[in-house]
Amino acid sequence: MASEHTVEGPRFSVVAPAYNEEACLEAFHRRASDAARIVAGDDYEIIIVDDGSRDSTFEIARRIAAEDPHVVAVRLSRNFGHQLALCAGLKLCRGAHILIIDADLQDPPELLAAMLQAMEAEKADVVYGQRRTRAGETAFKRGTAKAFYRGLRRLADVDIPADTGDFRLITRRVCDILNTMPERYRFTRGLVSWIGFRQIAISYDREARFAGTSGYPVRKMIRFAVDAITSFSILPLRIASFTGLVASIVSGFAILYTLVSWFTGHTVAGWTSLLSAVFLIGGIQLFVLGIIGEYLGRLYLETKQRPLFIIDEVYRAHERT
Image (cartoon, rainbow, N blue to C red; front, top):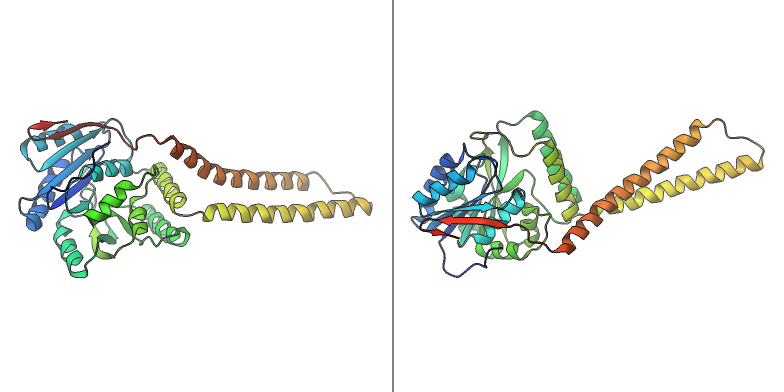
């Protein structure tokens, strides 16, 4: 794990997780550097965190870092996932303000100046990007994303703004608080909302990927949605309890009907209804146990208290750790 933040540091940090982004890194470095210079002159750093990529992402990041002393190239020991790669970058960054952005250039680094202006004008601790449009995405992904964000707002115990990702500008104190949070199943945009302080939105149009393919197939999107819901809501457990209660009531009436039929000499017609009832109750039980198991499994893994990530290498110009 990285050491804690020191007082001395640059004015701005840009933290960018990257997974198989070899085709994007040079363009990202150029655009992020230009955006940072506008607001901070020469007083900035760009931290690129390679999340166990299978391509030459880290080699390119290391070469960029060797040529540009503002860049820090970080390689994790394996693929820990986007949220934990972001966590690693936040642990290492030193800036008074931190821009969180992905390296695929779907979110424009040029928005940094407007974000800072809004932060200073509104005396906010967080300025998050809120998407007006999402270019280069299928109707299925746009529709499911819209349904997810609106469903999450209804389920979550905190108000998580709709149509937002991790793209945001945060102050040092928000970053330090995030770094004290030990949970493994991280949903960073939810954690930032949970922290509180003044948070404001800035609207933008999300671009298509600069190059390459998305690192979030349907399987990972579902996993991410489950992590988000279980991290910020116990409503699924309440639904499971309510479902179990309803099933118990229905079963009670079924038992009563069976007893009355037996006392009055009527036989239950056929075995189809019996099997249907068994399958129905069994399915409900498995559904309820699945929800409980999801929470219990997370509790079990959290109690292990393993490191959230392992850093293999940190490369700065004239320095290697």
